[in-house]
Image 1 (cartoon, rainbow, N blue to C red):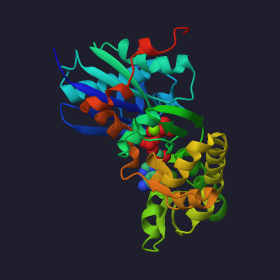
Image 2: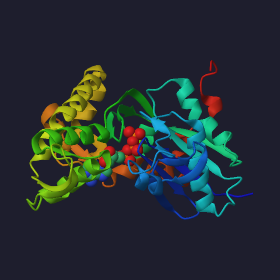
Image 3: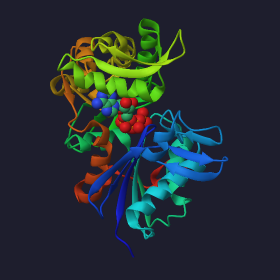
Amino acid sequence: MSNIAFGIDLGTGNIKIYSTARDTITNEKNMIALMKKDILFAYGDAAFEMFEKAPQNINVSFPLVNGVIADIGNMTTVLTEFINELTDGRGSGADYFISVPTDVTEVEKRAFYDLIKDSGLKPRKIMMSEKSLADGLGMGIDVKTSQGVLVVDVGFETTEISVLSLGGIVLSKLIKIGGRKFDDAIRAIVRREFGLVIGEKTAEQLKIELTKTEAEHKPAVVYGRDLVTGLPVERSIPTDLIDTTIAETASVIVDNIKVILERTPPELSADVYKKGIFLTGGSASLAHLDELVVKGTALKVNKAENPQESVAYGLARIIKDPNFRSVAYSIEDMSEDI
Ligand SMILES: Nc1ncnc2c1ncn2[C@@H]1O[C@H](COP(=O)(O)OP(=O)(O)OP(=O)(O)O)[C@@H](O)[C@H]1O
Ligand SMILES: [Mg+2]
């Protein structure tokens, strides 16, 4: 019997898999490219390469939408391919630890379990963990003994805002705002101010590029289609564009953090005040987001060192450290009325 274990964080944008066999995290786009609707053409980063570029007979899509599984068949295919890649096809009998968002229905939560159970991967054991608890562990917090920890995970299509205490979740809210909304805002402003039409992929690259070039005060060069002439062109985009563009979306995140703070019991509020907010998820890397959260909440912000992978790191800790095993639970522990 194999004693391999996997820690899986299925994100709307990226799939992260921690494997004990390699003691590393695989992080690729959570995407699938199908030819003629059902023939697997590519998955992961390779599928993303084809996104917005594929001909009509190739369909490139995300199996998750807003943090929950939208297409279980496609998600099964992507996951199975990755596990087979990581185990050279010898992964049966492995243990699976999967993170799930808190503020979703029991049926949506159970789908993460069913995904693995019905996948053909022949799991030995399937354990679930609330995503925010894994996030906390991944940021080095002892979630079992800490009180009043506010975790904000800004991902691709979602932001999860949670208050943790003594190994449990006091409050959690999942909102449909994430990196993709920032990309949309960038796309709109580039079109309006520079007369340039760009794709979603270019908008994301531009966002990441502007975060990098800002420190050097260098503009970013972007390629797209001229709105008027329809011809392909290049434009130079100044770095301060990002400031104005992210403000609106960031303020929605800040408002939702405030709602959670208002609902937090006062004794825990005091702990949150002392510790500050723990900001993570891939979009925590976005320039100025942390400053806007500080400004909007008057709290200090601790940014994760490796924000995109903090959930997967947390799952790795649950797998490796028996002290944290109790943070994960099995499906039998879930309520019976589903
Ligand atoms: N350096 C960076 N600067 C700005 N944004 C970044 C950077 N690196 C990654 N991102 C953004 O992070 C997002 C992906 O983060 P993450 O992998 O945490 O999301 P996810 O887990 O797939 O989504 P979700 O949690 O919403 O289901 C993308 O929108 C990406 O553009
Ligand atoms: Mg995520």
